[in-house]
Image (cartoon, rainbow, N blue to C red; front, top):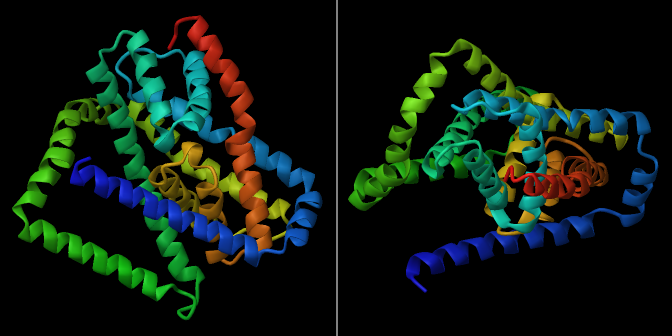
Length: 313
């Protein structure tokens, strides 16, 4: 095994160990009886609202994909593909199964593998830009919502120092600059012609932006309804956007299929950080994951079987 693979494996094991430790600490902190009672007494009206809100991210993903793909994608089939990715991601870590399924679908629609991968790159890049803007708004909201004593200054200091250290390494190391050019700059140059086509089409751009905004906001509204169902007041929506984006990053980083355990721990920790009681945060996180992931597994499996039978993937 090469040094690079050893370093990657060590990093993943470290993240996994930290996640397991967080789950253990959380389990010892939260009273199991209190959690069970909260789940039994959850407000069914807010659960229904959360269930409806959990459908918004699917619609957003379908809208952005159809708008940014150069070939015509039927909305119904594309919706089934996005649903099927929930099952594929359960079997593979870091959402690689969902990406492979999407590539296969685009191939069946007449696109070459390189073009399909480039299209997915465009979708993910524009989604990252929109999510970054929402996260910035969440940070501004956090600064206004929290008292100076409540702001996690050590965490912010670590982030600033890490960014400064990264900038210093890039400035001093020629090897690091070459890696950035090869893995970041070159792919962006290849994607730019397709991105320029989207940016010069107002209709496609509007649909794509609406879809990208709908995904994190839909997850945040679902989480807000879950918090209300658990009997707590919901934090500001942009703060919940920070929570869901952060939990998504953890899910991708931890080498566990579907982010099982890691996502729940990250959501709970994020809710506690924005002022939700630990027991309510855990029950809200579990409800959120049930509605946005677990409840989709049976229909996602059926959708995948149907798509394969029809040779759409």
